[in-house]
Length: 89
Image (cartoon, rainbow, N blue to C red; front, side):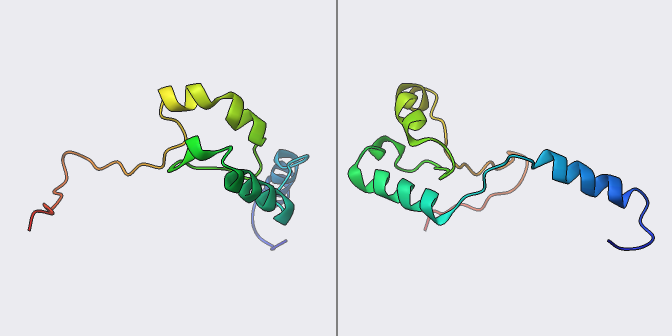
């Protein structure tokens, strides 16, 4: 720890407590996700965000909801107030 920062030890303890019990992504999780994707089980997730730490079966059970609500998409939101140049050539 650095000297001179007020409540630094309290902040560090808060972070340690917040992450207690968290499972971080591992090579095995990524390999399992890639295997499921290659099998075609997750074809409905094409173009959508996948998290290797999520249970693959949960994605599959929630397929209808994911499709209907168009979930797990990464989107770019641009303000209407800002100038966006036209791509017309």
